[in-house]
Length: 71
Length: 363
Length: 172
Figure 1 (cartoon, rainbow over the protein chains, first blue to last red):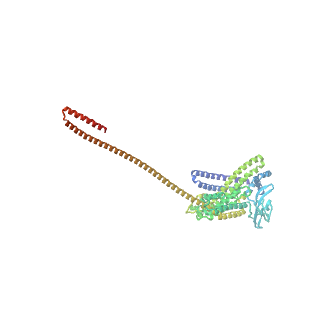
Figure 2: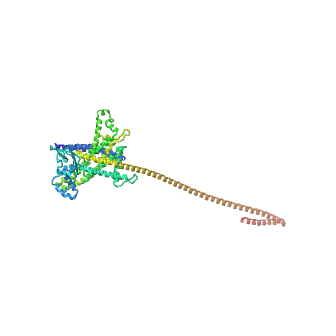
Figure 3: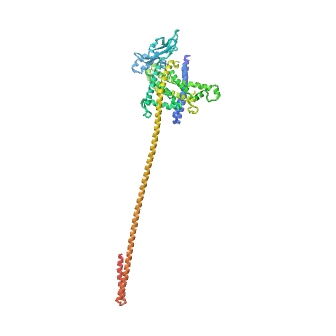
């Protein structure tokens, strides 16, 4: 039972990371595209990109913390 | 717990070529890597520096304990070494409070007293705070002694000014809005506090090496400070947006939206806390695990151990570079998100700021 | 999980450390620095503005001086051209004057020559008249014997006169 919980925690952490990776990858891609289109707005885009990426990362970290608790 | 620290000491001792001959001894017992890593990530009552052939080098730190039964205790943690007991207090070897000071009750059970000991993390925290104070006050003294019409500063103060004006211009001014001057000291303090602590944590030997920002208590208080800065100085409009937002009444009558918004007040700083904690802790854990690869493979023969050692060193160097970036980035992100949250709470309806990050901030 | 539980001791020390750092820096550290940085930024901005203004003024001054130089050059060209024209005119005038003077002199000489010829002609007429008178006189005086002798004499006299007259005419 104990090892099953560990397995679940590990799988959960992996899933959370996959989700966050998808999200952050999308943000990064869109931000690069936007910067490519409007290089003069690069500063604003970068700031917003970091903010949104940080928010997604926050959600993923919640998931990882829950996995930690299950460990 | 102590065993873990001895193992960590082996790790650090390996950095000094003269001590490598002790490596064969550590192959006698398979090192418990999980114990080593968790031991570093956690806290301890003395600051371990190194273990050499002549014994352990560690700085004993003061133990300050208040127990309801026996009152205040103040003594050096050297008295608690090797599991010895002093004034009825000892470091629990196992159980619920493993690694913490406990007091044996009359009925034989252990009780955890109020523990205000200056632990390794606390000592490193004070040291790093002193470093931050020195850095900023030295720079401030330069500015006090020079006029605006003087030449721009060089060297350390120039670097400091670059950081300050970068944070001020790219984070604080655009995110907080018109009355950024009120919040600039807090945000800059938070940035430099986190940044210095992160960097000091990356130094592998004595004055650094403590996992300060990877400790939940530290990040909890930083997040609490942001929470207070956001909510104590929030405008009327901010509170109205939370308690009675501009949405259809049926969403408000059954208080779903206000509830979500109200929870959002706490989740934002909670995310700040977890983010900094998890990032720094994970960084320390990864670097330590990579270093431990050398010791885990020590019993597998010279060829495997040597090649894995080389791989481990290369990966450690890479991780160190990444952690340098993360050390800056996490300080930056913490400052930026704090600034955004403060800026959202400073919003006034008449001068509606174009900042739309608020929609995404309420996750 | 022990790592996720904040320690009371660390909370206390962190409150103390961060509180002291924040109060000290918010009092003596960052306001000074932020103010200094901003005032220097302002100073740099105003200096830049002033420099730009000075540059603009410099540019206008330069343009003005260039304009003046151009005007002077134009003027010089004009003067040169005028002088040239004047010179040419003077030369032409002198030429014309010389030509007209020459013509006048020639005319005068011609006039004089005509006058002289007239005078010579008048002289010759007078002389011929006098000769005719003297011939007639001699013929009358000699008492002309015959008609033939008279005729001879007259033609001889006429010849003499003629050759004499012609000589004086052709010499003219």
